[in-house]
Length: 252
Length: 248
Image (cartoon, rainbow over all chains, first blue to last red; front, top):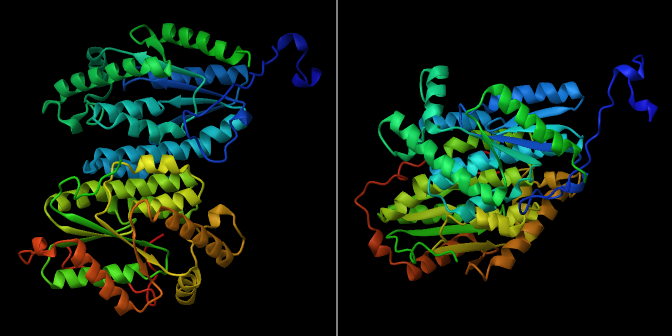
């Protein structure tokens, strides 16, 4: 159809933007009441990994690329909801919430973004890039000894993404990247609340090792694409681009 | 299968009251608490939706009408978890009588009426043990509605169930919403062994019955305190004729 080509630009200079086919979509479990998953035309792409794994760097590049290609994009991430992000941040400062409370607080934050950003954006045909998704939240809970069935039930409201990339970086390398960037290790990313060690450095390494193990275990049931995060930014980017192209061109 | 605190060998006991808005349950549990503390028992009182940490988010969500059935459910579960882990469980371990104005059954009823899958809601709350005694104040729908609508004509959005789009008239919406919640309560009454109190009776008659039933079911002698109570200095109860109720 000729109408798809911008006026004023001759055919030869502009490449037709392919429209991705809608995915066969489903929720992990109960989902969100009243949402018709078959009307969600966009793609949901998740990038997972620890702080310092290069998630945000890659997402910035992917957004540039997708928008240059002509796809609408929207970004979501943890603790970014209108509903509770400020309150959750504040509550975390004092560290007096129990694991269950913190977990449900994060679940509320996630659900708010799912319903008010992710689902409407997918309905409008946008590419949704999630800087972390339910997997980090679930891994954190499970590492803290919470009942796995309980955690799974809570997050059974989530949509199954079109692709999940896990940027795998060794705890030792994560330490280097975090101290180089912030001159400190984050309390929560070090799992200091579980008290694996009084020493934040040891704690960080042990905690990240537990998290990586949990992700490895979850890979079987959730089918993540493991991405070697030790390579250069450019190499990882090329790798992600290739795999996302497959998602965009996937036949329905 | 959920267990009660007694079955889990806690030294404390949890007593919950449930019922519609306007069923008189808050008056009854308040009088029960006054009686127990004036008798010198170790008693602690906790209200639904009252966690200091979570309240700011909940009230923002309600005021700005940001809540969906799912986030409504999760934010109340967050509030409950905070009170449960920080107050209810430690006090029950310390051997207190813990009185709860509304417990998980409120969430079961409301969230289900809002369209959340019942099994999901029950799953979310399954970290909590069952009350040792649950009083359900059963008033006729008309009596409950009149008590609320007489005293407090300004109905709030979520309280009236306006988010369910049952009616554009808040009063009509409230009626339908409360009717559906009552159905949910009645449907779970047997499963959770609710002790049903006829809430159409006088305040005094109900309180007599509640005190009698409590003394029968729980050995109150075990809960004698040393005169220091966390709830002793509690403020006088908010009165619906003077101030808006806090809940919802």
